[in-house]
Amino acid sequence: MNNSATTRAITKIALEYNGNDKGTAEMVTSNYLLSEIAEGQFNEMKTVAVRNPKVKKWALTGYISQPDEIGRKLKDEELKQIALEALVEVGVTNKNQYRLDIHNSTKHKHIHFVVNRIDISGKCTVKAHDIGRRFGEAVRQVCKEKGLLTDVEIGIQKKDEMLKSLIEVIRSEDNFDDLIVAMKKRGFEIQLSSNVKDGISGMRIVMEKDKNFHTERIYKAGYKLSEISNQLKISEIKSLFEVKKAVMEVQRNTDNLKVFQENLQQKGFSVKIQYNGEFKAGQKNQIKDIWINKVDSNQHKNGFFFRKNVGFSLQAIDSDFGDMLKSVSQNIVNNHLKSETNESLIEIAGRLLGDFLKPTYVSQDEDELWKKKRKLRR
Image (cartoon, rainbow, N blue to C red; front, side):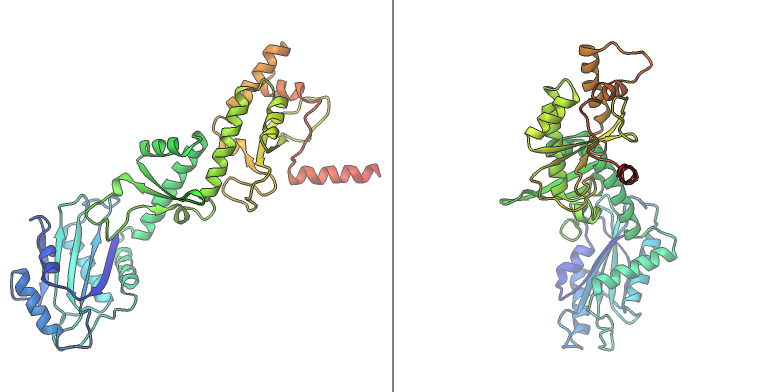
């Protein structure tokens, strides 16, 4: 559950807000408060607070909001109990004044609280240090005991869902504008940030269903890209789109893989062919993947897609990789050869290009095999 807690010096406005919520608020419990109106309750709290003049921020205020994953399954009494038990964990006692109100005007039902940190004997029972974190931990502990999903667990699920959709969209699209549209169709809003030096420099992903304009100042929906994945960076996505753009431009004017390779190299990209198994001259060599990297790239570390010293795998970054190879291979077949019907197009391409394609990238196992063969020749 989303939650917030902070210490501050309040006015009667805080209590008026708690008890209003566009006329839909419902007070579910209060303690040591006799008045039924906000101004009277504020005066009662203030009278107790001045018994400890050392404490300036004498009120603890905050809320607990249940997410869509729980929906409105929780009854008001259950939500109240979660709030009360969490407040007890951070120091609230039966001698502290408080008021709890459930708000229903937004799509996420939530409970607000105003607590006097000073109890009726003048003692400050709620420590201010790290109160937001401590209250959050208390809410999570209470939720676990009641068998409810915590905000952390829900957050993990949401991040996994966001990353899965983002990866799929990155593979199918080739620019940020189309990425934003595609993610919107999947129920996500993409918020991009930029600066003069780097252009697009950051990304935040928000689930449309999580938007709550009433609590936006307190709780900002969504997650930064760095919170969703510690591997996928915005710079890597930008480089990936640059590679895909170059590939598409070259593909439009290419009728075979040799020209495809040469034209990409002219644009400043290195091209490495990976085969299925060991390359054999004069025989069919099935192409498994094509790795592309910008020659002057400043990306030197492994990323989500990027591999150090190799680049980007077209198989990994482009969902149309197979169709692209088939398209290029088909042109070769139509122009140069009538093949046997049981040969795949990619096998035909491998056979046709066998005279000039060299194994510029091999797996570690294949590399060891080549080393052994070189030793035997000595």
